[in-house]
Image (tube, rainbow, N blue to C red; front, side):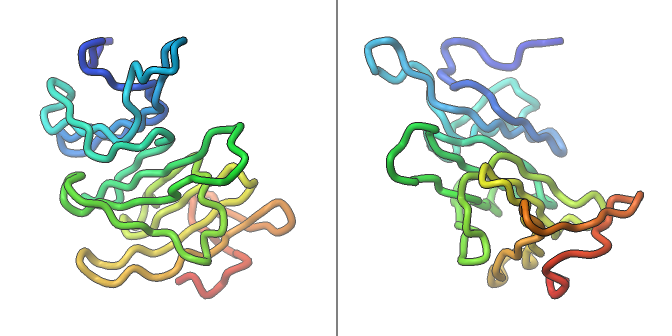
Length: 178
């Protein structure tokens, strides 16, 4: 093991990592000192040199998950467990290495408390996400530069889906996803 970050960097608690072609992205949660001062910054951190240097690409106190979908960076934001009002930012996507971000949230993704993300192993344009609301979602991403379609509910605690041995979704409650 080789440590990729140091205390001077100021990166918060790392919750998730993804790597592709020498680029590493990290999801970090903000950390506070006992005096309510930010000690470490949360958000999406990007390294373009296999972890030698890092930059904060998307500041967010509650970044929880990161993944690649093709060459796009996907970030999942959650919320503080003790907020009285829901403030999570849901799923964000960058097509330019983290310089700009667009929201993938819409009425189909009714819970923006994102806990995990995954690229489909057979199709880089398919994104899976899990939420703190006991739901899983899937969506097809558009080709880069195209309009973003709505997210579709795949399963929740009252409905189900079955997965084949090869990991492909065989039956869902949203049969019109693909």
